[in-house]
Length: 340
Image (cartoon, rainbow, N blue to C red; front, top):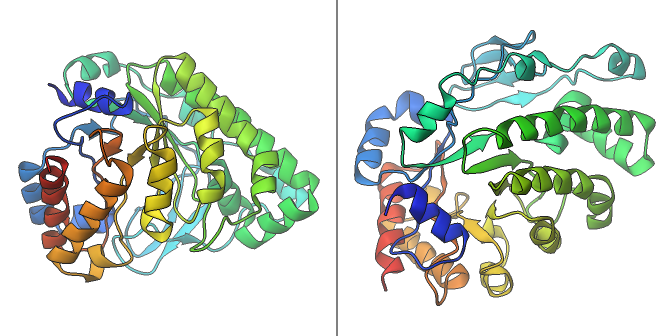
């Protein structure tokens, strides 16, 4: 069975001999832990790739070096400041402070207009990995970067016209991005937005359903109409919108199950969502022993794949605080516990 077949069977809730594997790494790992990363990949080959072979065009805004101390301007013109190497940094000075700023702001349409698809189909045919096309789509996060988090919350609460204009501008752009990726030779399409704090959504579930759910529904409809699987990443405590994500057609959800009630969520959503990880990056994975990590893996699999072995992708994010031994123990236990 190829990695592509293994992953598709998992997403269709068909029983599989082991969970497909994926891993996210922050820049620190790829820059400063290359030996450990290579050792890991030799021992645990991944089944999913986010490299679709599609190359976005060059943004007029981009500048600086990503993941290095200093400043980096991203493709949408948002300046990130990094105080240490190997991290993504933060946007401290939002670009759109006033209505005039919004009037003058231009989205980087050259990213889509200049996209290069040459060789993309051949790249897909040359691999047996499950290819998930990563997009630029993250409306809530992008609005925070452009407007500033505090001001955006005020905009949403007061239903400021600037919020609606910015939302529609970004949504039109992201619809084109989703459509472009969905038409390519890929198996799935990914979009992301982090919606949770440690205890709740960042806005009320009612506001989320009113202002953002319709956008996500359109993304899912385009992806599913193309015959592709929908992958969605969302950090934080998001239990309040899980029914909504199922309803609009999300197939694979990457969420922080360990800050929620994993057993409750597994009991309700197993075989409705494919759980794409995640492990306790704030606890055992970063600061615990290998035995504690293995215990968390067993707990997670029991919660979300209790009977029929399917509907789960072995995944976590490798961050600066996580030692190689714990990452290796986690993926070893994914395979061991799957068989038991």
